[in-house]
Amino acid sequence: MSDSEDEGTPRLSPHALAALQEFYAEQKQRTDSGGEDKYSIGIIEENWQLSQFWYNQETALRLAEEAVAAAGEGGRIACVSAPSVYQRLRQRRGDHCSVCLFEYDRRFAVYGEEFIFYDYNLPLELPEWVAAHSFDIVIADPPYLSEECLRKTAETIKYLTRGKILLCTGAIMEEEAARLLGVKLCEFVPKHTRTLGNEFRCYVNYASGLDREL
Image 1 (cartoon, rainbow, N blue to C red):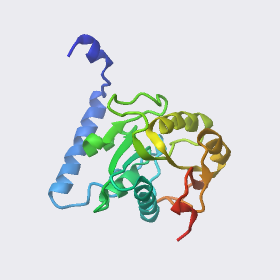
Image 2: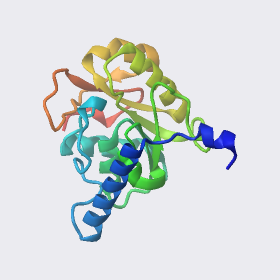
Image 3: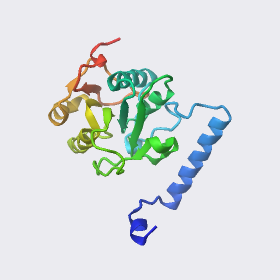
Image 4: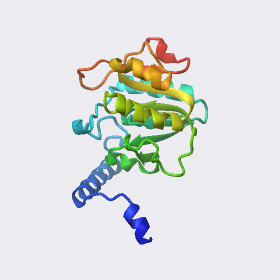
């Protein structure tokens, strides 16, 4: 590796690296001993400093089922800042879809090559192998309820998707979501494992099963 390549490679602090290695060891011990499924929602705890709030089991399942139906047989699904949907997708059996998780929290690197480090502040700074318009559907849950965060995340979404978008964000972002991504409000109301202060909703730009409450 050249000096220039080494300088351009992101590095973790010794403390962060040690914490990540400890997490990997705990994950391996759990799975090797037949413990909790490594894809279980909540096995990686929420970090409120990163504005993380996991969906409950019912919501994660509903969104996963919607993604599989929208992607189609052999489809590709991108989960942008939506790790609990990714986890539920990976728990499913018999789905012939590929899934990638675009996420800032490096703890999710435990999921190997399906984890792609993602910082919404650098919306198009993605690995070279992530081609434009290479996912049949993008599920995104921007971490912050702000125009800036949604606008930058929207750049990523539009780069990744072949057309279909499933956005989960606050009800207060409805107008911005429509303006930036051309999505409309769904009937389905997502729920989280914890009660949030802001009402959350789902938005899509295609004919969706989320417009029918179960």
